[in-house]
Image 1 (cartoon, rainbow, N blue to C red):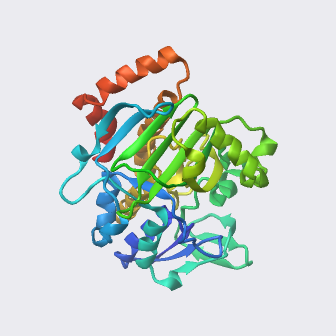
Image 2: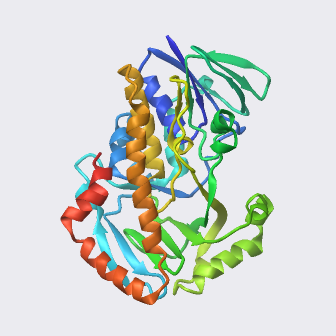
Image 3: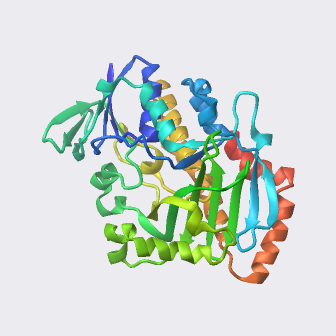
Length: 377
């Protein structure tokens, strides 16, 4: 029986563990550096059909529908006056059993945890060293070592595994943007609302059938290294207030009175593709590559990458990284293009963009190429 170490108890690592539970040829352990998993986090995520299909393979179709929402459209709106530009019909990519879905991230984590025996998950255990060979020897923060056949790094954008393997080259870089995240009250929409502004955009969408809505804003913001590393700054009330003011003054929504549980965090992206030399070390999810959050594929790609890896192992193949690089390039190009288009500030460019959006949002060939190739993978 092959032994697998999974570093990180996020979406990718937990989904991969659920897949391993269906294959008794492997034994595994999950190592999480935190001392617990926060299941009270009410923030939302979007899951497109490509990931819902994979989740349904481990029983997600039985998940309580009251804790899910199935938006049919994305409405594009001007932030300054909330006037609708156009919409994209998401339902055309659905099928009878798989629908574009929004929910609270914590509820997805809880679902994934329910499929894993508690003794397979070790908390408060940070990876400190890796000795590579036919077997992989891992050193942890408690000074204990353990030996495995495979190492799966699913420890996110700030992956300690990548830092050990690639030193400073494994660190992500600041993308000159900050995210504001929260929940929003007194909002009424049955779909995803995407507001476009000058050097910012924000998205509001329902996360369940109980009229709860998620808010996420992406704001252009240059920070010096000292500010980026200052965690107190990100928690500072005035700093968050200034960020919110930056978008609130350019929007006709009363964001100051509507938003709750506001958090902010700088957005980091991967510098380049980095592939370990050892053929028994794998990077999944954001640990493999993190891209700008403007195509709503972060969670879906974490799930996809874990599925690609299990297929590679089961088929004794060696094409995981080749496929993951190709797939990730698709997402990177769309994410960066979206961010550029969403944040235009020149009035003429905005006018032309809106004309193109109205045309492209109803162009079947474009939608099938731009969205269909991702959602229906």
